[in-house]
Length: 191
Image (cartoon, rainbow, N blue to C red):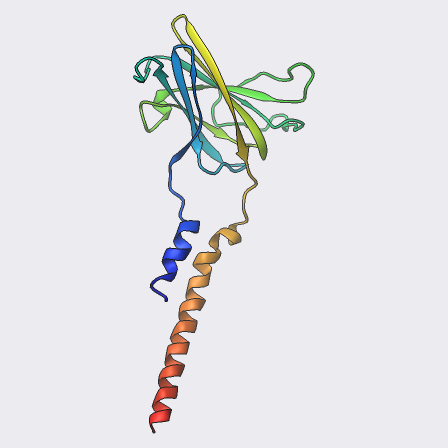
């Protein structure tokens, strides 16, 4: 039982460093695919990546200009002066049409990505909620934009994430104690 138990606990605990496809759309001459990490959490930085391909051949486009526009959840107000991301070239678009939505536009670059086929930008999600992410792509005279929504959750308590690891030592001690008790009990029956 102890040998099988890790296989039941591990799938819920293990998190790989992979991206999730949030959007894949054909817009004009481009196929735009937006990736984020699988779990977006308020207050943590994560990469948002974009792959731009030709719509006729699916060949990656490596010389495009890609900008990402992050729009905070509706009805939320960002603290003035709070850093939205680690990049100094962030452009605040401010209020639009009288709404209290705040936006930040960041250039996505290939040199910021570990996969050189992707344009990436690190972004620190300052608020929980449903964010709108818009990819603006331009290559020569052609341009396109595609948008998707991503859910940003609240950070989990650290102890809640550690409970599987903290449960192992007492479980192993209890199994060892049970083994010793059964062993002594079986020896006493023989005598």
